[in-house]
Amino acid sequence: MQFHYKATTHDGRTISGTAEAANKQALIALLHKQGVKPLLIEAGAGKKKSGLLAPRQKVKLSDLVIFTRQLSTMISAGVPLARSLAALQNNSENPYMGTVLASITKDVESGLPLGDAFAKFPRVFSEVYVNMVRAGEEGGIIDEILKRLATQVEQDASIRKKIKSAMAYPIVILSITVVAFFGIMLLIIPKIGKILLDLGGPGAKLPVYTQVLLKISNYCVSNSLLHAIPVLGSIPLISKLPNLLVIGGILAFGSIYLMRYIRTDAGKYKFHALLLKTPIVKVVITKIAIARFSRTFASLMGAGVSVLDALEVTGAAIGNKVIEAELKAAAVEVKNGKPLSDPISRSQHFPPIVAQMLLVGEETGQIDTVLVKIADFYEEEVAVLIDGLAAIIEPIMIVGLGAAVGLIAASVMGPIANLSKNIGNT
Image (cartoon, rainbow, N blue to C red; front, top):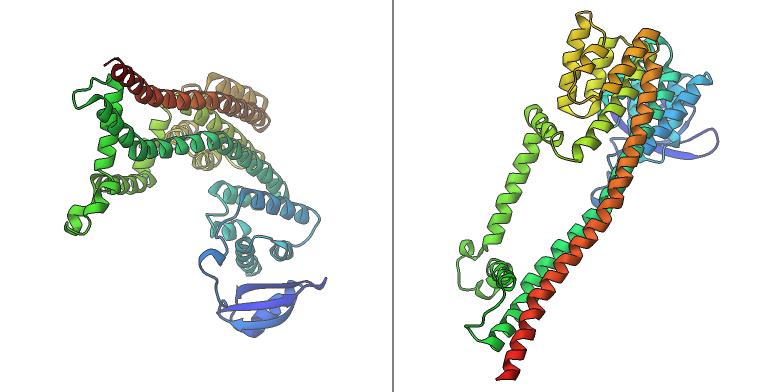
């Protein structure tokens, strides 16, 4: 049964949350175990907020990093696991994270392993996160594993932040350009076209680029709502729909179908294969995959996980099905007695230096140390590459936008000047 409760902590703070228990007495006992004093307990989850006021069902990577580091510190200090989770639940600033931790605390108190409790929330704790926690529990080094996980999550967050920052400017400029283009085609060019025809007459000879611009404008106007609105009262509903809306509907349906297909295993594999063939994009994706592989595999090996299990978990963590398939094939060869450096050296996506470093790690027995250095190197490479792309994209976008504006201005002002000169000479 689910209850909504309010309680006070030992330092006088008032907290609230939801929890499941057999009855009120069981929940009171549970809250006392967590070191809090219940003030109000109601059956049901309480009144949920909806719409914009509803708490976001999402945990940021920064919240996950803080939670992981704090849990590692508390476990290292000898605080019992259930008590550590309860304390972090009470101090969580993210309402959804607090709800997740409440459920995990209850599961741990009932005897469920921490890794299995985390596995119930795949949107918060990734497969790699869960498996590394399980490995830490089996090896008795859960605090050390959590420290490594915090570092790994921080690195992933840093890479994602750089990519988002690099893409923000081009997306804004491209959006403004598209809006401005259709605005000019729908509202300005038709009026200017009328002026040109009035000045030169029906037989006026206009430059080719001006004719193309006028045809594009005419097509946009004739297939837009601006053309449809005057006749809405006299045409049946179906025939009122402009061609652009029909095309937009087809594109929207196609996009939804494509997104659903990409979520399937076959679609995801083909999409990832396409990305690995796209210029520039393939370089970024490959470097990110190598960095993620190296750091994750090193963490798992350092935790005492077997090579085969580490390869299986790491493949799923890379985020690219094509490279994941390569690692699965490598795992088969390792199972047959070959060193990991052998199949990696024949990979289409891992550069030779990775195989060479792996070979050195295998010979010295320090694979995890070597892979951490590879991860550091490629993460730095990704940062430099993204910064470089961002620096190149900005001037290219500005030059492209300026060229478009200049072409439109030349298409309009050139014919007007020539026609005005001809009128003056007659």
